[in-house]
Length: 453
Image (cartoon, rainbow, N blue to C red):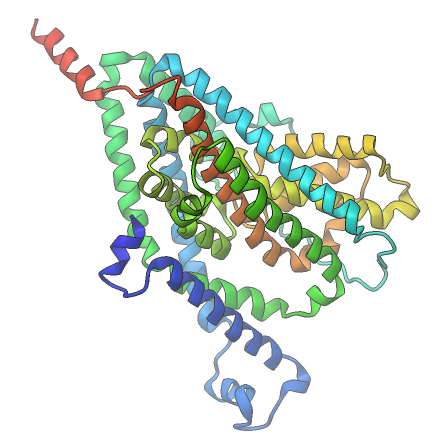
């Protein structure tokens, strides 16, 4: 466990280190932001701004730590996902794989449906977009966001070139598709491929070891990322669009701390306090990095070691969930779409009836299946929903200024949902299928006996 590894080097547990780093990052970031304003000049040696000016400190003095940490996590994500999923699938009995896959998909879709409904409920109750003045909001730039996939979802999951997909952090769903095929092929090979299956298991352990080393830097990385975010944006964007932010945060909080614990208790058969205690490191890492893919290594460790879910099931559910289970993104897309529909309703005549909102939910469930687990990944797929309901894609520019903070919160909701899904799938299947794992050592010994004979 990452926590236990850190205790020898740091007295504080990792999750406390990350939390302290976030608080310090917000404080330092606000200082830099306030000192960047023309009215903040205090003269030579005057106040904190004078000290910052004299010391030649700036945001980039600290933000590089976040960039390095995020690059290290992204470096390990693709090989970790590849080895993790192959290891998980190839250790399952082939007759159980279909049942596990179907159960997992139903849990993913069910939880995302609940998330979208929670989001729409808050927008209908508070109606942040009704009477929203579009004229005083400066549209942010959306040029840095990669375009949504031009082809359909089911076509986009098939990699035309697996090596190209392995080199792209926005093509993880293609990596997952190939890894699933590879893992199934290993199972089909039986004892002839048992040695290769064990090899991927060893490779997965190596990836986890590298991840442990990277996580020692987590507090410094989160510190740098928060300073960069708060130091650039400050509080101004949040004031102008505060009502919308309140709705998003209320909905995410409800999904995270009300709906998820209920699902874990009634469908997962686990005490919610034990669940949150077990996944707290993954939650805080997701909050700091805004990337469910980058948080995957920590999520796998937490679910296996702290919650006691079998490695093969964890590797299968949590790894696929990093791209295909997006509770926070589903909720966010529903809120953003209905908020903008309310704002543009007087001019564009968007359908806000129950029928129109059911269509929004349907589009959200389809688009979130391929949400990349990277920062601002939810915004990318939101453009698909906006286009489908007749809203201008440029409308995203109205809320992009506050998206970084909201992205942190929805990523934490995404990651927590992935961990909860593993608990639920495990509880659903455990009574019917006592053992879904293959004994690879037994297969290898059978192969050796056959060879000797």
